[in-house]
Length: 391
Image (cartoon, rainbow, N blue to C red; front, top):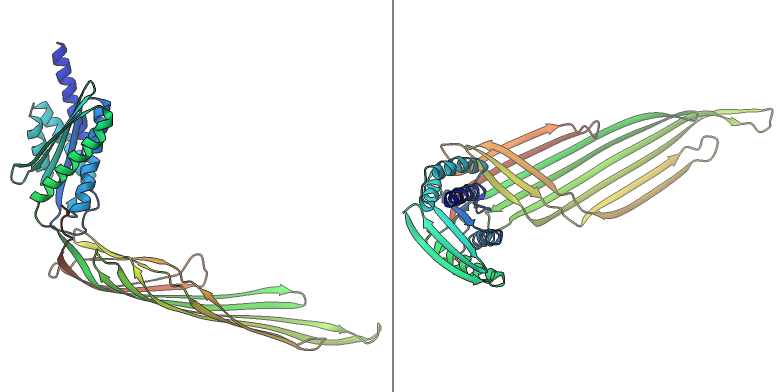
């Protein structure tokens, strides 16, 4: 009876590990039809052995990611499907190898790596297997033994390296599929503001208009090189403030009433600025079914120059007229902008993405403002070899 209980317990452990397993390879190559799903699974019999098998899984995944960029990852839907499948296979009494292979086949995995870590007293035995499920062929079978936890880390490193190397040697050459071409971006922000307030003996009216244009041309060079961007900014603003007051001037004597005058005070401030430059930029394309999203960042540009011209005039009213004038310049850095455009793939030309998107609207934070952005793109899908496999 005791043996039967232990057997069932082990069976449940298998299910738990299959459910919690497969910290799959992330960072897949974008939009690559050559992606290979590689499942990594492990099991153990003690807490120490569990920590080691988790380390093994993470280590072999890192080695594969560093050396083979055509790896895909497991989705949440895959994990849910895996849960039901694993339970079914366990209840039917299938062997571990068969169950893993069937799960891999059901979820579209081409390769499976499985680890089994057993601890008996101070001896830790690690066994790793790499399976090419497409051909039903074992491409790697490695083992290591550690006498104590101090030796386990080095043994695990060596085992993971051998497994990853065997797998990569059995895999097809990896190619990076990339979108290359051009993206152009135009942004126009215009603002208009007017306000009137009461002041002593009169009113003050303030009007302000502003316009900022941003243009960027992107050369998209794929995933291995950063995009190149040529960016131009132009900024101009005009602020007019007029104060009109009507009052009576003091007389020459306490008993004499002075004349009634109008005093006008005008203030004009004009600012014009320009900035341009070339910089590395981020630009990418993500494809989901027949839809795609173009994402890019307009990089900030340093060294912009603005010139401020300010004039103040006072008609004087009861006194003498006055005027002041200032002209100065200052440097500034442009903003970094993050933008996206979405569209559908033309099924007749799936390797070419061309289009334009215009978005106009008003900013709720800036009354009287209007923002228009225009994004155009012309991208082509190319297939180029990845970096050579590291031995």
